[in-house]
Length: 65
Image (cartoon, rainbow, N blue to C red):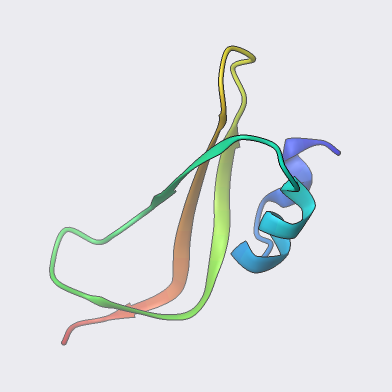
């Protein structure tokens, strides 16, 4: 599996494809208080080969509370 194959997948599906592979999950947030809506999707995956994958996710939309 190529890490690029995970981009834009819903996090639940991407997690399933990762299996037991080590990863660090980060969630992108706006610079203001917000509530995420829709699916949490993979935006970027970095693999430097020296540790766990760095997975950045974000919601499909955000709204102010």
